[in-house]
Image 1 (cartoon, one colour):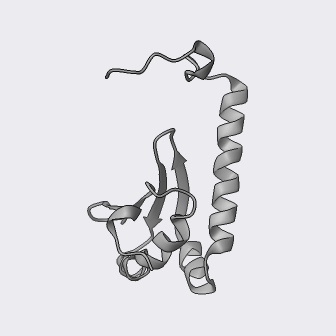
Image 2: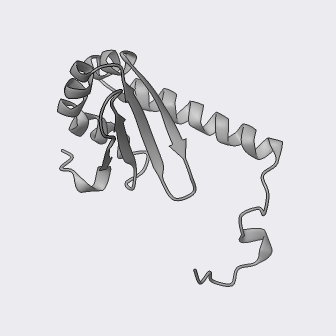
Length: 116
């Protein structure tokens, strides 16, 4: 990978400090709270039936949703456009990972689906 020459102050740190970890955790909590609050009641109820969290990296925001059973998994897939619509203001390159208990994980990029 060919990186442009940047001033050392503009480069990411070579190692993470405890403060970096704390800031990253707080960012994840804030994004989770604002995302959940932006969802309608039906989507909020559906998310309450799943385990979900955000994985945040410098390049992408990923919503990881672990489904309890196949019925929740199918219902979640019906709401993926609504979820993407709420996720897009946070990052146009966001990804949704739907992880069923028994089955294959489905990765959906927000910019790949029709968001209205």
